[in-house]
Image (cartoon, rainbow, N blue to C red):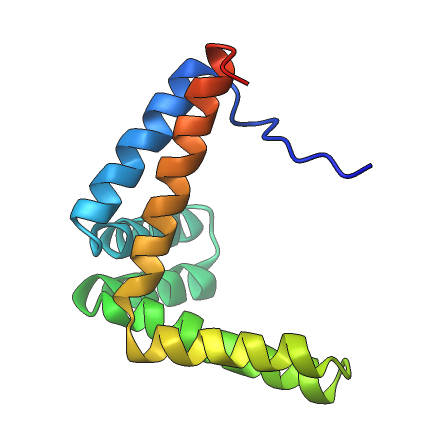
Length: 138
């Protein structure tokens, strides 16, 4: 029997954090791109401090690019989905999944902010579900 559950999203604190994060991302859709850019820069500094110069420099450069051009991250996801869809069609012989994946990739390429809104809605819904589970509403 198929069971849908949220094992990591079952406490009040996690539910409140996810709900607030979802609201912030929906209100300011580019904030997630800036956060990812800053995290990439910080990760690059950690790589360099750990003695790994090449991955550190690459991570810092990509983080700066994402921070300066926040939409680039969404476009990269769109390109990835289109390439994945092509692989599904030609590599995995799954026409329907490939076409749907390509369609989603094209939508993300045409409307890059949709990805951030979808992620914000996801966080909002899972946060509210975690709060509801905490209070035993279902």
